[in-house]
Length: 69
Image (cartoon, rainbow, N blue to C red; front, side, top):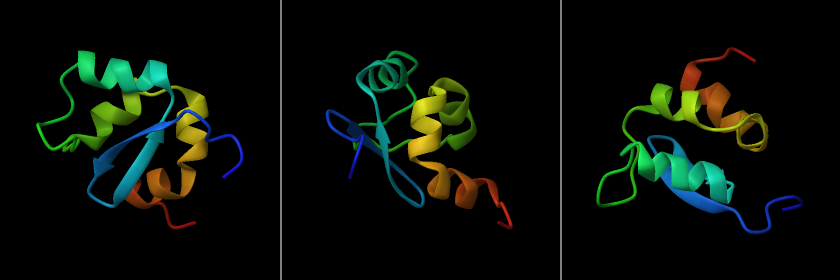
C-alpha cells in the first residue's frame, strides 16, 4: 500500500487501523489500548490520531462512525 511504510497497527472493532509512529505512541501514552493492542473507545482514538492517519483509514473510520457513504 502506497504511503503506509513504517506504519504500525492497533485493533479496533472493525479491523486494524494503521497509525504513524507519533500517533501510535500517543495512543499508548493515553492508555487507549489494552494488553491485546485493542482500542475499545474509537471516538477517543479518532480524537487522538492525526489527519494523515484518519485519511489513510478513511473507509474504516467512516464504517465505525456509521457513515452512509
